[in-house]
Length: 218
Image (cartoon, rainbow, N blue to C red; front, side, top):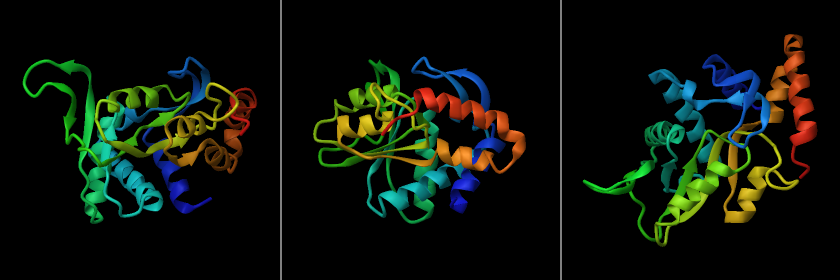
């Protein structure tokens, strides 16, 4: 496993973002582990998270300038932190996010921050994709921006779960919308990390059992 992946998983655990137990995902599935970006609560933590996203951005997109979009609510802090981290490394990118309800006074609309112009490309930064529901909501919002193209989506963890069919939710999003979805780590990286300590045997078994039913076939 690459060092940055190990460091990222350790960061998620130390910040209590990665939890093990019994949870219900946005998709309605009962899951044995949970990724909750809402646990990021300090300046050091959000700065570190932004650095990991920036690392993934440079690895996959390079020095290309895009506009970061953080879906409300958890994506907002991720977009801000990622833009700061990218700026520190010489790439100054604008960011924006959405309101849950459109504002009918002042500047109005559903977007806050830099609003992309025709011909510009957007990169969505989210915490996790389970069934692709949140990304489809984001695409519905972004569809109001004429001439703006989504270039990619970045998430913390690829859960490698089925979407609507046998393919993974991330693969389905890629096929449906025509842009790549990248993750810093995936669930099999987490399993590999956990298997290094026998104390994690129960959690490993529960995750593997879950994937045997809900894991993507392709």
